[in-house]
Length: 451
Image 1: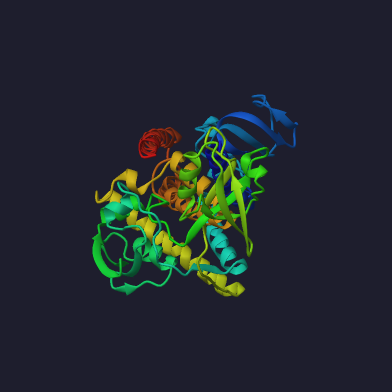
Image 2: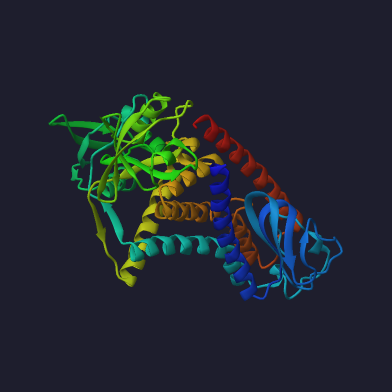
């Protein structure tokens, strides 16, 4: 249910922002917008100025008189703005037998059409820049001053790459590493598409190894590829009428030791609790600056009624920004991610990277959205910004159905000074839609296989 909620929330925000761009641009160019829809397919409910709020489909003979029907549709996998006189995802061509009207998309000059069709992408780009800038301005750039790696299990990508539990990263490609942000930047953003030479401190000795670009490509789709050290299990929620509630445990508590065993992360705590059903366990908690000792008795199901995750407890620095430097930093971060995304897309096109490694579908989005939201509002907003940027880049690709495909058709019509026959445009849209559905099905399949 968490996955479903955060997937719908995330897609809903991004689709709303994207379609709002098309909607506002169309209104600025005095085009009629018949429908503003979140979702595809059957109309569930909506509102317009003619008949107010209604459930289900609108009467087929309803004349909106230039007003917009704002609706929620059944399939929460996108959305659309139906602009009068435009061949779009609705495949409506009822206007084809009439002369172009002044308020229709097809009657407007080329520059206005291009503005309207790219406005959604521009809004997604602006959302990304705004989120990155806002995080930097209001919170400052949070820098985790650690390069120590947490638990690395066998048969994971990190283990196959050569990393081990408690490794301390010294350098990547001969560049000295001093914080976790530099670890991520050096591994995935700087010089993407090449092998990386890693030096770590392991058992008081410097160890060097190389991580292949193939593993890094797979790791870029895995949010838990490497986890930082210096963490302790943190309690995010207490279930009412549970052993944890009876023991006086509170949300925000940090477990230091359980059954007289020092805890390294939440996995340690879960392992001890699940294997100690109906057994009293001594527990040491850090609550604020106070150390509290208590005891907990897991139920017969090996649970104590908590939602638990890892919290970083090491040193943190904040790099503060003024309003304008925050915007500059947001722009820099955005274009850095654009560069990396285009690099990965290029590697897919030239066969150097599998589609499944470079792209994630609804399942992957739901998974990462939930994990980032569970870590707090700032990680979730960061994920939302990166996903918004990915949506902008994908949408501007010159492919039928996507905004980039419409852009190419508009350019061709502008050069030819006449409209391409509607039958041809619908045929192109249909072909592109089918290919896009096949690609989406393939990506969803890979999401499920790789869960």
